Length: 56
Image (cartoon, rainbow, N blue to C red):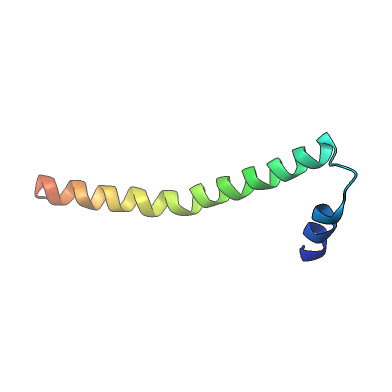
């Protein structure tokens, strides 16, 4: 992965649209993974807070 970024940063010919699309796709997958990982925790915390407020 490190070599990929070094090649990409060292390439002076410019990046093609396909490379930009690949990078955006990887970033999108990372964001979706993070949201899925945190979603359950945040939902549980909100449910706990709701239970505490309602007194149950």
